[in-house]
Image 1 (cartoon, one colour):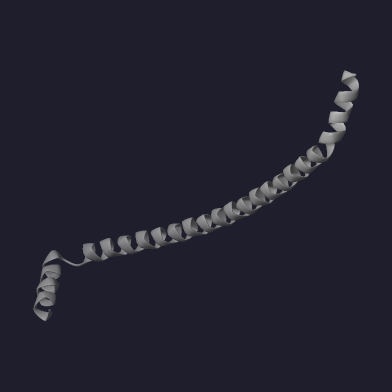
Image 2 (cartoon, rainbow, N blue to C red; image 1 turned 180 degrees about the horizontal axis):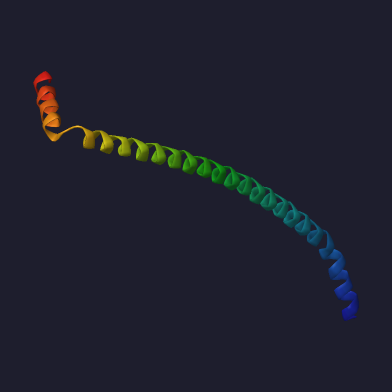
Length: 93
């Protein structure tokens, strides 16, 4: 008798289980789509970050060359001349 009740319960519960399974499958599908969307976003941001790091490295290299040039120019021009140029700039302002 217990077997019949169990079988009857299974038959009664089957549509509900099927419905729940379908809901879970849809949720799993949406979750997988969200994971793919977020992964694509992460890849795009990573590429953007790489590009920004490359630009920063170029700017730093250019700045290093300019600072080296300024140092060489300052080494060539005597300090007295720098003082005179500073005085002229102050008068012009």
